[in-house]
Amino acid sequence: MATLKKFTRRFLLVSNIIVVILFFAACANAFLSPAKWWLISLLGLLFPLLLLLVLVFFVGWMFSPARRWALLSLAALVLGWKNIHSFLAFNAGAGFSTEKPDHSLRVLTWNVRRWDEFIPKKEGGGVHRRKMMEFLAAQKADVMCFQEFFESHMPKEYAGNIGYIRDSLHYPYYYFSEDYRRYDGAFETGVIIFSRYPILQTFRTRYNHLDTVRAAESLIAADISIGKQTIRLFTTHLQSVLFHSKDYHNLAIIRNGDDSLLQASRSIVKKLRRAYSIRGDQADTVRARLDLSSFPAIVCGDFNDVPNSYTYFRIRGDRQDAFIQKGFGIGRTFAHISPTLRIDYIFADPVFKVLQCRRFTLPYSDHHPVIADLQLP
Image (cartoon, rainbow, N blue to C red):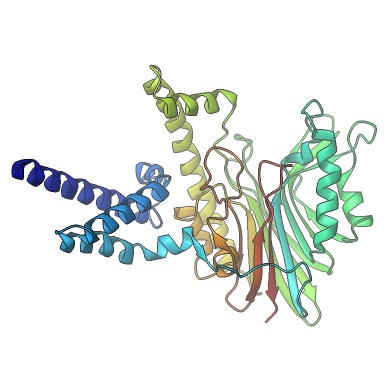
């Protein structure tokens, strides 16, 4: 009995050490370029699980005679706090008021998945656009940033979106990247900025892989005049993993441990590796443009990466993550695969004060919108 007890304790201790090592590796993902350290980037996806295991070991050791080993997990939690705090927001009861505070700027970002108008056969697709527009009208944002924005020049088949938002929702100023256009010019998709305030100047940066891999959209920026002040608003859509129906089937195989597990895993890892490498380069480009801004900057959009990633920390820098400042919980913004995927963000220059932030859970797009109220400097 004593031998079994001793073996169990040693097994648990070794397991705890392995979990802590993997946890530190996942935390290191924040500053290691995925182009060279793609395996560490993949490990970053397991950060929520590793965090949970570290907490389980900590609590378990605390209630055992070998209480001193709890220090191992405690040290991991302390040293990994920056990553933990980027993953979890601790502002319980912060709430969100639909009434915009005085002297504030309401920012909305949303990957609208082409309003579902692009796939008319999709069940409910034609209805989603109207409901999405109604939601936007109710929020009364000052500036709105959209990714996978779809603009049609065939009014008999697809409704025009720019004209409706400009005239019916009253956003007279906008800048559209028009990244992808159908061969006959019938429609375009890309990222777009809408503003109730005048846009003084616009900028666009195309990523190197934009022409060969249709899974990202440009980085665009607009200098917006608000009273006597000017701010620079950025938005972008970084490289997607490009999962298709077959890939979701492969994920199901991995979860269920089917016989074709190895083949399915190879296919998923190959796509993840490529996406991480491209997205790392794009994050460097975004950071370089942000550092050149001569005005207080806000950057938002679909970064397609989790909060403990290289992409997240590289772009965020010393900026404030609005959800971490005023949100609560994980704040999932992607509706599929995992409940831990917060991949849409609003980052604000330190001169702004984040007043409130909310992630809205809506059934229309595969992404959820994020809205933040920022007090102007």
